[in-house]
Amino acid sequence: MDEELKELIEATATQTTRQFEELYERLDGVAVDLGARIDGVEARLDAKIDNVTAEARHDRNAILDSVANVNERLTREANDIRSDLHRRFDDTDAFIKYTYDEFERRVSALEEKQE
Image 1 (cartoon, rainbow, N blue to C red):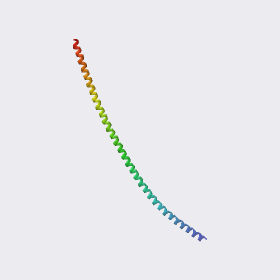
Image 2: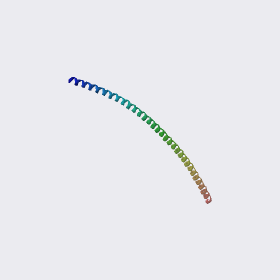
Image 3: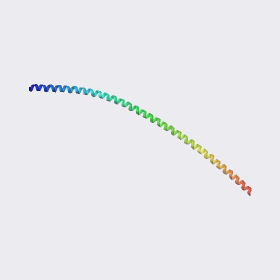
């Protein structure tokens, strides 16, 4: 019986070893499949990240262009306002000078009449 038990243990060990080898082979296949899937997911994520990055750059450039356009329009408007303000100031200054000269002429005329 010892010999029978020994053969049974050896047979069981051989069978267990074969089952582990089969399991390792299947695990290797699963690992390769999983690696391929991970590579596929990584490639898709890289493509999406590149796409999102490109869209963000485009949006940023559009915003920068819009800000530049608004800045340009505001600069033009400010220049127009300054120009109009200077023109009005010059008109007001000329009117005050004319009024003062007219006042001086009338005062001089009245002074001459009284003398």
